[in-house]
Length: 276
Image 1: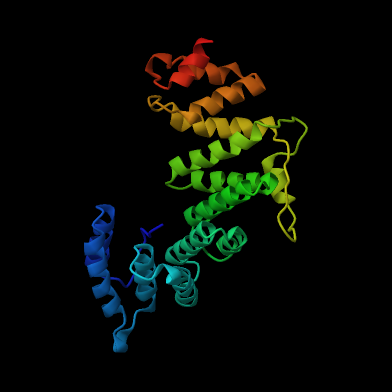
Image 2: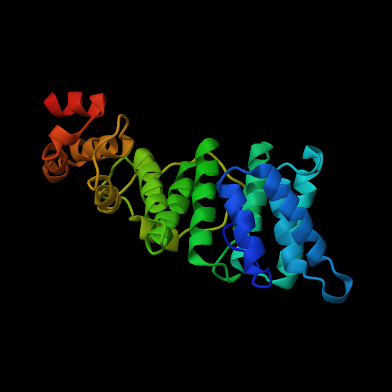
């Protein structure tokens, strides 16, 4: 993932133009400009290590270097930013990018270790921490370690709900709810209790844990707060999950809220369920 934050010392005209090229898909122009930015950052009398790390990270993500060297390059960027501006948004993004590279290389444990370096204690911003917890949750789901996956997804949902990333918070709620509905138990601990009482483990394993209806209600409310703004679209997995939760908890209000918008719904699967 590319960075939307740029080092404070980078001239705004260069960084804005570079981001403009990226957003418009003008990779060749972006790479040409990156050469100039990199050269300026390396001026002997006024070397800008933060800008150098930022632009080298971007170049690695854009394919400007040998694919075999991408991992080493991203690690160099992480280490450099950790030394000059630890806990900054750009340092957090560098860690996210390195973790994504590990995951894409099927090095899931290394990805989890890298993501664990993103934390409030390290000074990283809330949105970056939320994205890190989301990625950790997804990795744990992929290896079948569902209990800690649910904790990570829940923490991601909570953090992203408090930022300007509401869509990402909904994604977290959906991915958590998809797991939670498989096993519901009113006597089980809430997610907050599970997070507070969580203990470190030596290594991941195949674990799961029942979900509490109280938490299901919170996740559904987050999904509906966004999903009911516009119910159109041929594939509405968010509303489908809410209907599943409505059946599981016998909460007719949730189903009713969707039924009230039935004429606007386009997903044929939802229409079939609502008409059944």
